[in-house]
Image (cartoon, rainbow, N blue to C red; front, side, top):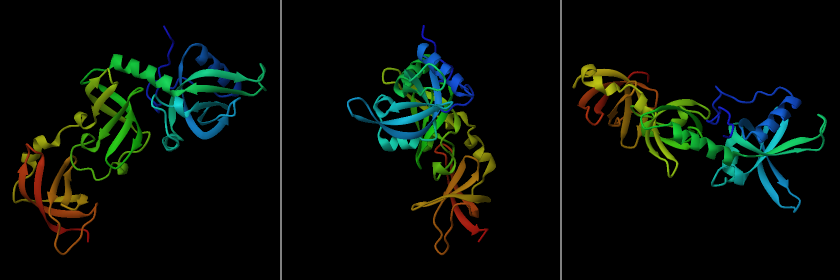
Length: 287
């Protein structure tokens, strides 16, 4: 059986396999990882273009173990390859890799030493282990690798999952980049697994308490409540009443509001089965 380190999730800091402090220890660890087919993790510190004996140039990610540098070509960054822009997004992040070649100009510690590695192989092995261990309904760790306004891409152990904004939290979220950042550790629930395609659907919202169960107790029609503007869209204004509960109000005719403004709203209708509250802004409190 191949040896494998306990690191499976890129960027997950709890179980780092390698903590080298000097060049000698780092080189020994790299060679041991190569000989024993171990998966290592290190930060992408740069991008270089290297030439081989045939004068063919290759763009590579540069990683560092101790002060020993390693190189991973774009083709070996994942199973589909990687564009230069995608690689740039990984600079400063920690990635998994498997050492495929150790290169040394001498046996003593003063000789030049470097290594070649493959992130693709590490992700494939990690994904295989992950698919064996997880099941629908399981709670697992994920590490955020990319954030846009409407979705999060995260790693759950060699498998990239997409978490749409609708599965991040109850209630309205105006922009995910305001609340999630690259490197964040999120607990998520497994909703679906396709082992053949190596695809997994997950949800963060599924692990959070559902505040809508108490909405009819906490809010009454024609009553007025303090809220905070959580989003402004063309079709209306979202007002947060409590964590996970937002109402939708029409735009004011003679006054503009912005996200973060405190307002007083009157509840016009409550539809808990659709998780919808219709409201009217009766007063802007901080203008």
